[in-house]
Length: 462
Image (cartoon, rainbow, N blue to C red; front, side):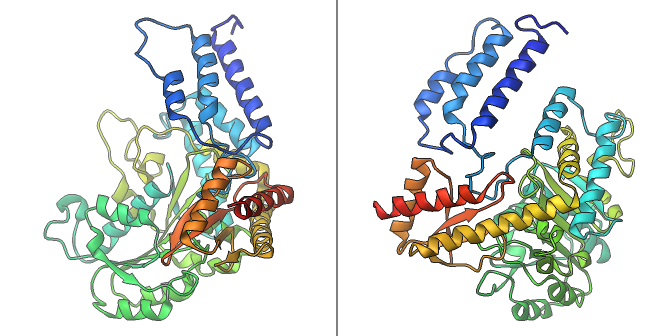
């Protein structure tokens, strides 16, 4: 490679230097602020150029134009949406993955990408307490992972009832009920719509004071129509409170139904299983049939990367795979594309592999434990300043009430505009609340204390 202006080598070095500068500045730059959409459109928009632009000019212009609109989600004081940062090795591995430009469809299109998903998926199963025999798919996130898990569930419960849904569709099929908490994540409902089951298939189950599924009500719901093909959706990590369902008890009840499948939505909370201090929250996890989680949340892998696991690999393949004459190796059991929705797939496994190699088993456990401790520190700091903490802080989620819906929203808006940290709002049980998620490997006690001080100062100034 030459290093002449505009060469591939020059462009990659320019981009890498821009990333290095950005990452080095994360602890110091405002996390976010009011974005000037008109200015961004002016800098990035305009008519499509009539002719070519030199590649070095393109990259230089992009770096300058995009910077004012970037949100420091990778930084230590971003506490919104359960977004993790990105570990150094995972970030570098993702840069390699882009440079290698591997198509992770199957072992023919990229042997390395296929094997690294197999290895990294095995390590994830070991950490999360999922049976080693389970299949693993690397997708975009919890939405796609939940969709694949529920598609596999649909396949299996209907097959057990004598119906081939892949061949015959849903018209005329036995009805399927989906038993899920009233506090399930909205991606579950979206998946049900996409799969043709519809939101009306849901039999809602009450949730307890902290948002975990009510076991007594679950028993009542399951006892009604016990012979109907049933998908039970459980949760580790309530999206607002962090509460986890009693998996062992709930799965035991689900097994009393003749044709049932248990899917666990653990977008972030499944990682509690990797930490001795929080593992009890996921007791019984190995008893489920499918599981979903995100690597780009608590594992701190760059966006995007979600994982779906199925205890029955043959059902997983039957629900998600396809073959075509021109696709050499397609449809062969074990191909990465058999387990997800995407065929044109980027090689997400490299970053997951790198993150797990960087951290190791003890590092993942320490990351989870530290984030939980920092979440408690955030809650304690706000409480000491007179703010009501609404939830039991069992994982990395904190809900705070500033006295009224209007005042809480005003505090959130002020914090987001000021830029010391970023956190969001939510509506939980009829109340507007500040929602704080501590998920970043680089967050320190000082980051928490600075953020608490900023929140209290801005609240006092309203």
